Image 1 (cartoon, rainbow, N blue to C red):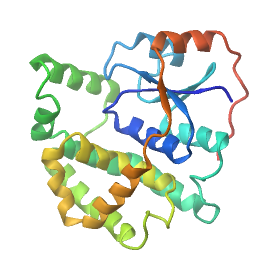
Image 2 (image 1 turned 135 degrees about the vertical axis):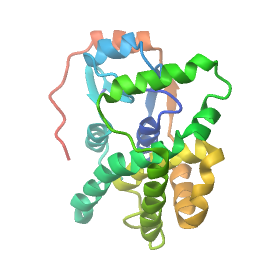
Image 3 (image 1 turned 90 degrees about the vertical axis):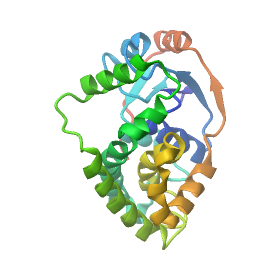
Image 4 (image 1 turned 90 degrees about the horizontal axis):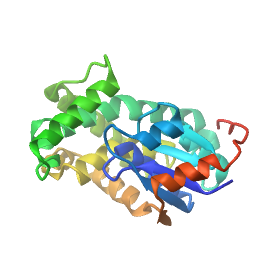
Length: 246
């Protein structure tokens, strides 16, 4: 396949999920940094209107949503696998739960007023409002958990993950699978982006130890690419057949 180009920004949790998958599979990749909020003219030009982050570009082919991106990267480099054959269904179901219920509980906790104040501490006052308005426009009619409810749910979910991390180095065994990457990124945001709230992890030390092992995977070999160059690459390539899902 052509070069792997990831359109992302540094504090994006779902981008961190894919950056770690690239590191785990030891796939070299090119980094295109995109704005965290609209406008995103080059992103929309490539995706036909899809505005979420990250997006994976392979030549003229654009892959949106991290579940699909994981399938694409598994097709590019099957080993080490994200989907152990004897656990394929279980780890996929867990990953779906982690990318939805766990993630939104984590972010409801992370972006409570104290967390948001930390994130935007060095930004002008209008930046927090612009981010909030952007996310409301993106999520439409989705009902978000209130901070208190999110905190309770997050604590409960962390205990579930701790039960699994107590047994193995990773959630389903001695090697990471798609479930680990899906569970990690909301917790990564707590640790890396809102450390003032990271004391919620103190009650589940095995989660912290597991998260340290995930962090140690790293992002692999990355080089920078401009957004304009990525668009030029897409214009000059022919789309391939769709990549089969795993």
